[in-house]
Length: 63
Image (cartoon, rainbow, N blue to C red):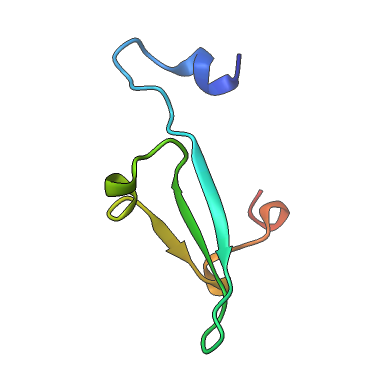
């Protein structure tokens, strides 16, 4: 059981499990694609996030 499970109300949907891949681009900076782990092919075409280097911060710095 996680902290999220303890604080979730009965009306809330369970958290979405995410997966990620690094996309190595020849002519642009690499990027990280983040998407739902168990999504079908048709859902994946519209349900993803693309993140670039400037979009990340150090976790310890933000705490």
